Amino acid sequence: MEENNSIHVQWIDGKQMFAVWDEADMLLGYYDTKKEAEDAFTEYCNHNFPEYQDCDKCAKNERKWEFRYDRQWKKQKELEATIAKLRKQIRELKNG
Image: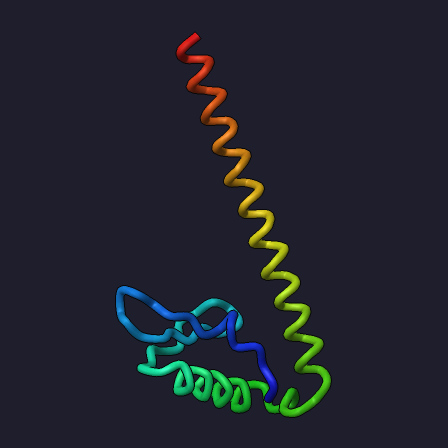
């Protein structure tokens, strides 16, 4: 299964290990090396989604999830900026 594992495999500083996350952002486990983590994620996908092994649907679905992830990340950043702006306005109003 061809995957872009960057979304699913992340380095965790506090554990000094790589964490593997599934498509629902649930932790699947910790691994000492990135290769072990990527292999574990590939095995997880092949076991749970056999219909997507080595097919064009994999790439299409991965692009769809990356798009959704990017869109959600951008929306979160916009909301954080709005919150910071509103907090600044509140401070200015309180200080008169």
